[in-house]
Length: 616
Image 1: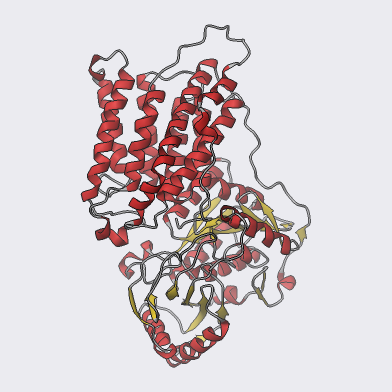
Image 2: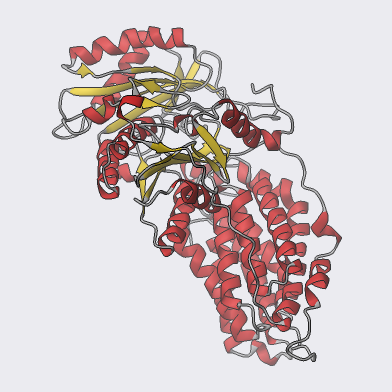
């Protein structure tokens, strides 16, 4: 288990800071991760690897000549946020574009995708290369759904070498995707890893058993079986990978035998003695094979085998020199171009200057009160939401929602105190939620709140039609990003009934109430709550619970439940307009300090201490 830590919630940040201090000659820490110490003297494509902490040397350990230009580093097993990805890209970009490369996990896809949108809007060329090498995670007919595991290393190496040699962005991306299409990995685990501060492993196996194909976060594999002798394990690995030999593949291969955290090198060498003869007997030439720890999972006991089929284009990139804190091959100094010693800003955004009316600042106080009500509700329901999620997931939904609302409330208070209007307050809340919550739900809530705020703007207190438009913007952003539909057993199952009911009731005049928005919101929240409860009968078709769908039947979806809960308590505040101020237009702002108080004492509490991270 992980025994060396201070506050478990600070483990990932402290580990990154220590890494950057030790390797200060090669890397420097920036907002969201780390980049190369020295920027290139002339523009080159910035290859940016990324993902959660806990997989060292992936991802920060691979920053350096011939490999990555930077790494975006999330919490343990948790996707980094869009803000982190954006900041690292701004720090690493040198004029030739950036490419994010990462394993195919929902939170990573969403966050790196949103960062890419922001970079593209600023005129920066940006692409994404996903790694999908794990043959156990989906059949060949659905290879695009496979997750990325140790094959990350091969893809990163080939892309980094191409960028170092001066390839343009389109070519680096093409080569990365080509390498991914020719890479296959199979792994197994013998015992689960333990988060800092946790009392039990993330998952367990019976003594003398292994989980074949089990994922590096503990995701379900193919099956559990008795632990075989090394020769039989090697035969199993090789047979499963060669069964997926790409069409037209050659006879030269890159091979990685990778330890997952607590499997010793001597054990790997014993297994290699079973694997290598089988590959050679099949007619393959092994090109500069690697045996060691390259993509780990904290202290997980396990091993994986990766094969990449090479050709005349990929082999020189696989064998090219590299120098990083955790990996060296050849003499990278001989091929590296001149580099500047100048350190650039780390990409952190400057504080915003807000342009808002007093009317909007007044409504911002309502927004703060709504966030405070949501915070109270989520803190009270944290354990229940976690228990619901643990039935078929990893049990982190309650903790993630608490982290998100705590960060959102603090950011909203700060924005309001600096004079932000309602739209900017909610946008700041959304950005903070996405940055700190982790997981797919954190991304979606963050993006949804930002869209809600952008629809409101910073000029007026919303009337019924403006509020309906903001709710629609929230729903459209979440469904557009998550691609979920009614019946998939996600938060969308309670979100879309709320949005549809709210809009319809407002169009009907909310039954002629003198407060049509408040009446419509309350009725829509009741419909949303009922829809969330009805998800208990569904089988999940999206997200982490999908592989264990049958276990989920009988339990309501935690995401749908928490959304209905939040919308219910936010309604009395968001659906109450504020009157336009009677002061002259040029009167000094007075609402912002009061707005920060409107959140009440609950907005200033402290979150429960939890282990450092959870899978996304």
